Image (tube, each protein chain N blue to C red):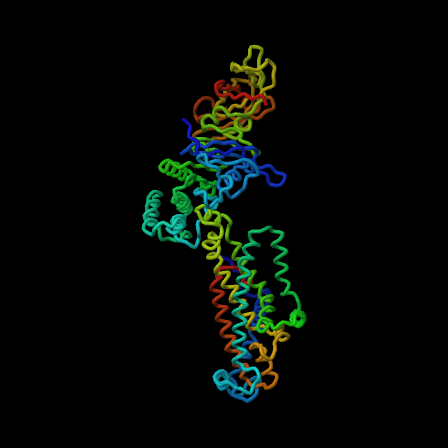
Length: 279
Length: 348
C-alpha cells in the first residue's frame, strides 16, 4: 500500500504546506489577475476594482494599431515593430553564438567550462540599472551611429546566460561516443556534429530561442537607458503612455502580450517536457 | 603462410607522465578474431582507440595491408566500431541507424534498403526496421549496433567491451552470435574485454595486456595451458602461484613434494609454480593422521565443488567435479596431488 507523504488529517505540517503553496500562487499570479481584470473596465481611468465591465479598451488597442496617429513622436506600431525586430535578431545571434559555445564548453576541459559559465552568468547578477548605465556610457563613448544595435547588443548580453544554459543542458545528454560512432561510419567531424549533435540539441536550442525572444521583448530597465527618439521599444512606449494617461488601453495591450508569452512558454514546456527545470 | 592485415609497430602512448602503452608490437592476421584482454587500466581501450584513430599514438606506426595509416583521419579509415555504450543514434530508426554509413558513402536508396534488409535478416530481426531505437531491448540494441558497424563492409571490425552491459545469459548467446557473424563476414576483428571467459570463447588470438605491455599473444588454449608469466597464469583462470624449487635430481619441488616434473634449473634455485584449481586433487587423510594441508572452506557450485585449503601458510584453491572422488569437509586433513603435466614454472 502506498503511504501518502502528507498526513491525511490534522497536523500543522499540512497547514504550513498549504499556506505556503497558496501564498506562492497568489504572489506570482496576482499582478496578472489584477491587470487582466482592470483591462475589462468600462471606465475612463484605471481603477481597482472596476465598477463596470466592457471590451472597449481592447477595441481601443486595435484602433491604435490600425489608425496611425501621426502626431505622436514614436507610434505604438513603430515601437512594436522595433521590439519584434530586436527580439528576433537577439534570438538569432544568441543562438548562433551559444550552440557552438555550448558544444565547445561541453567537450572542453571541465575547469574552463566552470569559468566560462560563471562569466556568461555575470549579467544576471549585475544590477540592471548599472548595466544600463554601463552600456549607455560605452555607446556614447564610441560615438558611432549604432541605430537599432544600441538596444540589440545589451539585450544579447542579458539573454546569453539563458540560451547558453539551455544549450549546455541539451549538450549534457549527448555522449562523445555518439559522435565517434558517426565518425567511425565515415562522417567528417563537422558532418557528425550536424547529423547527430544538432538534432539531439534541437529541443534545448528551441527552448533557449523562445526564452531569448520573451526576455528581449519584455526588457525595460536597460532599454530605458539606451532608447532614442528614433529607436524605442514597446515596453518603453507603454511606460510613457502609462505615465501620461492612466487609461486602461495599456492594460489591454499587456493582456495581449501576456497571452502571447503564455503560448510561447507552453511551447517551451512541451519542448523540454521531462526535463527537471527550465533554466 | 601468414597474411598480416594490421601491423601495430612500436606503438607508445603517454598521457602526461603516465605511459599507457609501451612499445606495443602486434600483427593481426587477415580474418582473425583478436581479443585484447586485461584488467582495467591496462591500456587495452587506449590501444583500440588508437587503432580506430580517436587517439593519437605518441610514438610508433600502424600499417594496414602495408599502407601507413598512423596519421589517417578516423572517418577515412572505414573501420566499423561497436562502442561500450553502443552509441545508437537515438533520433533515428533502426533502419536509419544501419543505413547511416551507407548514406555517407552516397549509396542509392535502393542499395541502402537492400543492405539494411540483408543485415536485419542476418541478425535475425527482420521486422524491426522502422522502430525507434528507444523501443528496443538490450539484446536487440546490441545486434543493431553490430549490424550498423558491419553495414559499411569494414576493413576492420572493432568492439569496445560491447557485451559488458548485458546479463549473463544474454551475454552468452550474444557471444555465440557475434562469433557466427564474424565468421560469416570473414572480417578481421579486434575486441576489447576484461572478461577472460568471453575472450577465451571468442578469440583466435588472445592478447593479454597489463601495465601497457603485451604479456602474451597466442591462441587461447596456449595462453591457458602455458602462460608466459605469473601475471598471465593468475589473470587467466586464477592459477595458484606457489613457491617452488628444483631438486638435486633436476625435478620440481612444490610444497615440499617432489612432483617428478623435470626442470632445467640449478638445484636449489628459487622458482614459482602455477597450478590451476582443477589440476589439483585432494586426498583425505584417514583417521587422525597429519596431511599436507587443512580444508578451510568448501562450496558446492553445482557441477563443480571448490575448496580453499591452507598448506604451509599458503591458501590454495582446488576445484573438482562434484560427486567425483573425495569430498573432504571443512577442518579435514588432506594431501594434495598436483598434475605434473599442467604445472607452469617461472623464475620470477
